[in-house]
Amino acid sequence: MRRSTLLVPLVALLLVLLAVAAYLRIAHQSEPAQTATTAADAPAVGGPFTLVAPDGRTVTERDFRGRWMLVFFGYTFCPDVCPTALASVSLTLERLGPLADRLAPVFISIDPERDTPEVVGAYVRQFDPRITGLTGTPEQVRAAAQAYRAFFRKVAAEDLGGEAGDDAYLMEHSAWLYLMDPEGRFVRVFPHSVDPEELAAGIAAAMGETLVASGDKAS
Amino acid sequence: MKRLPRRTLLVATLALGLLAPAARAEEVRAGDLVIRDPWAVATVGGQKASGAFMVIENRGNTPAILVGVVSPVAKKVQIHRTIMKDGVARMVPQARIEIPPKGEVVLKRGGLHVMLMGLHQPLAAGDRIPLTLRFAERGNVQLEVPVRPPFARRDRKARGD
Ligand SMILES: [Cu+2]
Image (cartoon, rainbow over all chains, first blue to last red):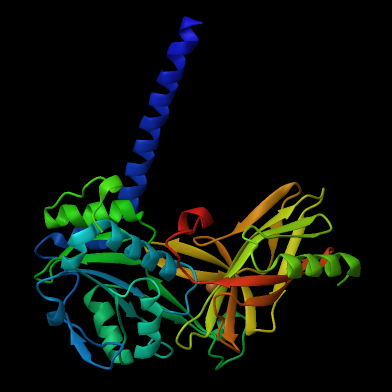
């Protein structure tokens, strides 16, 4: 009897330790090569870009100076990864409360062929009006992705069992959320599937702020 | 439409029609298959693609093989699996999905989805779109899938996406 009552908390503790260990391992493995590039000699993540906003205005990285940036590369044709990331960003903005004013979430399309400025604008607005959706010419988009060391590749319709020239092609793309500081310097990445609570805490920590407990958040 | 009795489809369609306006947790039974909580993602601003999600349960004693999905709303419909590798996301077409006996397969974000490509019309939240699941041996299952926004704060947790 006594032994079994002791056993339960012990097993529980062991399970918690195992879960923490597993989490740390996964978190560690999911860090991209980019996080290693904080060393001075490694190529920097982020940099100048020139893209187009939903209202047709030309936008560069300088327009975001003075605010933290959370950058994600994706495309509106994508029903899974991109909505997951944008939903997480939206909940994170809510969770950040007033701190959200210091953050500029930016969604950059890597599919400019289909994603016109209007399409990207309407798409991101569904998640949160504070998210800026950007696209551009294929050259502008390629340059922006290169600046962030973000990978993308078109998978033609004929490689998916369709006919050549079909517009039902897909894109493969890096799915990190890049956090940049107000000077435009790379801080860290989060996986696209990050829990909003964790994302909000990570951003607040980078800002040197502490989040109030979720029960009494200001919104 | 191979083995599945026409009557089952009719009943399923009727039941859906009656439940349509308010139903949250929808369920369609066809033989030993049960399709639960199907939904498709609403489109905006001329988006040409969408995805559909659901739970497919197999109450039978033999594996059920989903071999394809068709819908009049899109030029091309495929079953995709989202794969994350080295931080890169891609969608990989699946020729078949096996639902084990007395088991289920969940189509949800981060895993499998029905990919609707080359939409002939926008999908508006509140619409219902026809979707036909094609199973080997078991025939077709007809669904009327409700369309919802890609993200709604309130029911995000409940929907598990
Ligand atoms: Cu897909």
